Image (cartoon, rainbow, N blue to C red; front, side, top):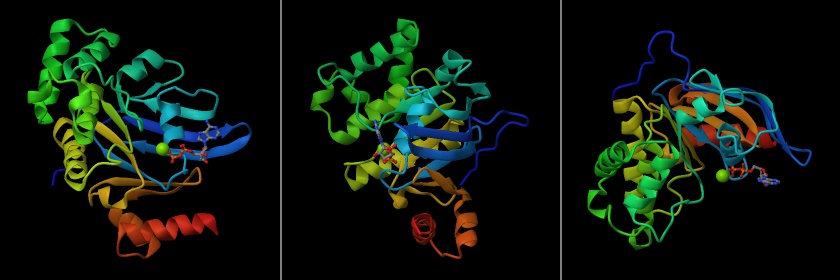
Length: 253
Ligand code: ADP
Ligand code: MG
């Protein structure tokens, strides 16, 4: 399997440092720091309530008050938010497609928000949708599609403006095994073949591939960050599932 290599001297696709965040005085993220290389695939692995969605909300600037820095392709999301946001594609935890619009209309609307011309938008939409095996569905209303197809439309939408970083928040929850596998594989291809860096938030350990960077987040703290083999070695475990148990139990002790 190929491993993406960042160009020499390139800024990481995503860099988070010393990030603290509280809801109404309750600390949710504590000194969170990690980076994802250009074209890298990083799994943000954490149980429910770990702070994954909160972290995504900070990266995408839905929330702002915080201590620490977040850089996307070297741009601080605070200082250069338009430039930084333009480099990012996002698939949120809760689906955000308009069910009564067709696939093409949903994509065209998003493209317009990114200031793309109609012709470019159409070309990009056709390309992304084709790659995701949805070419026959462009004219169908989203309401008629399965859960897995809707998720793939959201991924296509997140890629329309050719971002360098794609954030996906629990994109396979509620899907059947075949749909889940297809989406995990597609995201890996984006990283390995197209050089799009991916941050994939999940609580599902079986979605981790052997070549992934794994960032274990538990109760707002990064408990481990590295390759699968490194994390297993550091915890004296034989599988990433066992490593995850050790790391999250240690956090609860
Ligand atoms: P995850 O996505 O990993 O499941 P979240 O980021 O959704 O975790 O939640 C992290 C913590 O923040 C949880 O304890 C959750 O209850 C709390 N939380 C999430 N949203 C809010 C909110 N709007 N107000 C207060 N607490 C919140
Ligand atoms: Mg979440």
